[in-house]
Length: 308
Image (cartoon, rainbow, N blue to C red):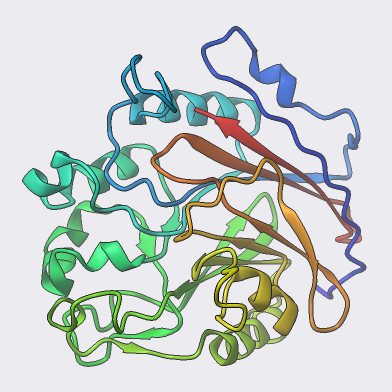
């Protein structure tokens, strides 16, 4: 399939689950056609082992989050549209006693029960060492992707792929992962011989494969680079990645715990639009991006952040 003109229309809606708003609030009348294919991308980042909701007495996030609420919301959305991809942008581990006690087993099992499709690795996913991550990996019934971490001389060699291609409703979706630099952020003994490669150069190679060779209709980057850095303007981040590369349709970010009510629209290296989204941390929000593709593969997009 050839790449067609990329037409973006963005809208944002926030819903508070448990406050009486039905999911019909999310349905859009902007696009409806029997010739249109609808793909829903749901995503999380930096959940940090937050299994339970925040207590009602919490000063900032009372009664918010929790795996049970997220699972119920995901199930409801899947009933609305069966063509759903569920993705995570890293830092699944570290933040509550669940991780200290179970070492990541519980997080992977629960994500598997929710039918996550793909995740990438964040820096805290190395907190039990690369061997600790490997020991729990068999509990994950979903794939991990990371294109700029080279695991050649580690126990993860061959287990973490640079990208994966998924097929949903006749739409070919390429998903690849990018991780933040580990030196100075993660103890060397935890990541061992893992090699960090320049994310911009790696991205240019990966998107060429996904768009030109594999003919993907959509290309999604799961990034744990961070949204942006005010004090380090030259540091690579999601916004810079969008500007310096081409052929990425959506960057789902993590690491900086940035709460966005709607995706940021950036211009890429050849002047085309690319969406950048991130939904904060601790499982408080569930990101939702709806792609509508017509028979000519023109694309319209609706983006939402849902408070769990």
